Amino acid sequence: MTSGLKGKTEEEVHDILDAIIRLFCCLHGRDLYLKSYEKELASRLLAKSLISYDYEEHMIQKLKVECGAQQVGKMTQMFKDITQSKETQKEFSANNENTNNIMGVEFNVEILTNGHWPQMEEPTVILPNEIQACSDKFERWYKNAQSNR
Image 1 (cartoon, helix red, strand yellow):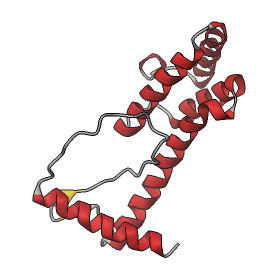
Image 2: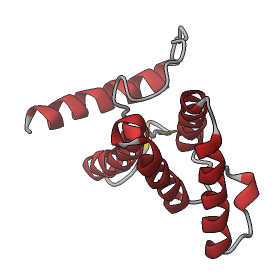
Image 3: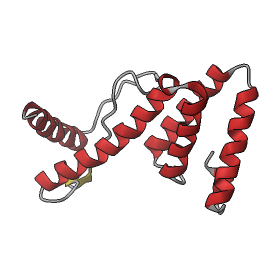
């Protein structure tokens, strides 16, 4: 959905989204389309390659009208996770002398709700010592911050 919207006016984007929904209404394999859209949305959110959060949310609202809130609930939660992750990152930075830089490593995290994101095979990863130290510091801070809630 990203490449076809570059340089379009807001009205043109809404017309394109409306056309997509009209086509969606004609599909017999709606579930397949929703799964594919969910997977691509997750990729765009994690890669931060969205042209506009507003356009994506607008599309999800249109899908919600056509399919119901339960069908697009995971997509809605993915947006919430990204928003909450940004807030958590700001809190962590404020606690870390207003920087995301730990031991010379620029450190950013995304906290995702289990079960709301498309399943991916979990790779075996061995983190370098510098990144492991960042991860450990964030994990200690996060557990402490969550225990106070």
